[in-house]
Image: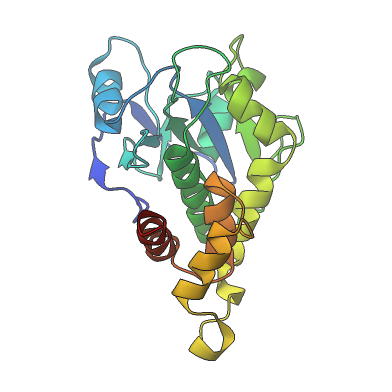
Length: 225
């Protein structure tokens, strides 16, 4: 099984059949910049080391599958964790600490996590223990992964909150009478009512609007000024 959000598959033999049901997500960072997640997946597949991940996300927000979800990937330095977790490698937008992650990669991460949570009935929560439904590599090995930037947002609940917002999309009003015109929402975006960056996309999506459609209108309005 693979998420429908994956745009490409670079499947590897570095995997094992799960002995436990999927019950958590483990977020990693690539410790590097890339616009082609498939290159990292291929590098893992051809490496002499036993390394792999279920999914890879690049700076363009593209999601590439590396290991089918019914298999355990070799990602987190802990067989028990990986047996229960779907693991995700996320590209950075800088090659040094704090290993920041760009907006497109971050939004793709949240959307993928939400998709996984919906399908496996996972309630995302990081509690600092190995028993949480959100875990990170540094809990199992001497590493800074997923980097100070992502780890900070996981630790303070930002990632958990964003995932929960996407998981709750089923409750979004869908009839035209309950929503504003995209043009009116675009004006609100320009006035600052919807925030910026990934926060803006999260809020617009949760409110039932097509982020790309609204952002396109915003861009056109700004050009016409």
